[in-house]
Length: 343
Ligand SMILES: Nc1ncnc2c1ncn2[C@@H]1O[C@H](COP(=O)(O)OP(=O)(O)O)[C@@H](O)[C@H]1O
Ligand SMILES: O=P(O)(O)OC[C@H]1O[C@](O)(COP(=O)(O)O)[C@@H](O)[C@@H]1O
Ligand SMILES: [Mg+2]
Image 1 (tube, rainbow, N blue to C red):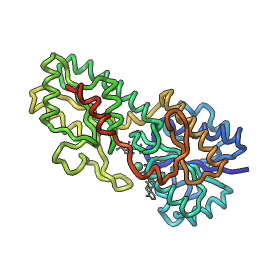
Image 2: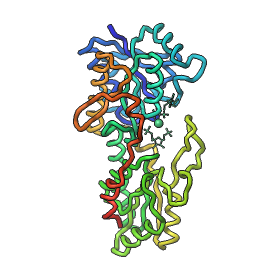
Image 3: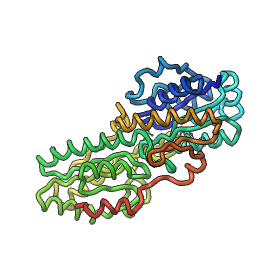
Image 4: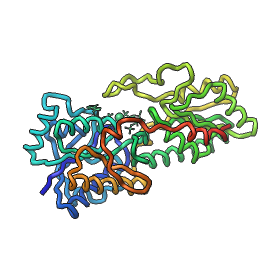
């Protein structure tokens, strides 16, 4: 019987538990596989820290946010027990034949490296920002868009009451998908994303034209947005575990600038981690469940070095290295499609 170890790595997002449940249910019933979970991402694999995963453990999990396995930004090459050789020994000791790594581009890069060094590993793509290439959507993104859209709807009523300009900052480090989708759904008057800088003059022109029609302007900005002339993303919170700037706060920077230049009272709201917490939407549960089920097929077929992906409505297999060539950013045409109705 094949024993499979599952781990969740990198930032969490709603749907991770549904992947775990999908994998355990299909893996045990269809492929006769047995499962354990590595605790806290790669750390559990490196340190050999596992929990059993069987049918009762995953009961009712698909609607639960977060990950029952825990996650971290610990890397598989970190520490005295890190590296492919040590990991192979640990897997041997635990009787684990294969690894399923659920994570984003960092996790996929680490998985690719381990695969190159002989570890039997497959993956499931995860990113709240929806910026992993070679998969149409990632689970968690739809939930984040839903939460951000509700925030826009709520900010709109208070903005209207006070005739204020409301700025909502959402996640999106290098890709503005959450801002674009939530801003579109919520009817924002301007959507600002990392891929396409806009000048302060243009932003204020949109805001002013909305006010001149007697409406309260709504601006949605992704945390990775930069104004022309800014050489770095806005960050005041130091670096994360992988030496990237911790983002957040560009909305608070823009609000007083808009107020000063337009004379319109402006308030900023940073949505932050609310976007990543709680119950996944039905769409995300379905996607996560299907990906979890499909990744057990990769194990059964011994398609090491691949991750599952959504292509249209089908689940496909994609090599880690193919998925890592590019980030999936918002194309200019896709942004311009909405930009024509800003203001
Ligand atoms: N190129 C790499 N080689 C080895 N390990 C990596 C690499 N990139 C990321 N990692 C490890 O994988 C962890 C997860 O990656 P990270 O980018 O934080 O999350 P995500 O998988 O969500 O993108 C990182 O904290 C790091 O320890
Ligand atoms: O504070 P943390 O956990 O590092 O996460 C914050 C960052 O992770 C993100 O949510 C993106 O992560 P993923 O795309 O890997 O899900 C960014 O939008 C945000 O800047
Ligand atoms: Mg990453």
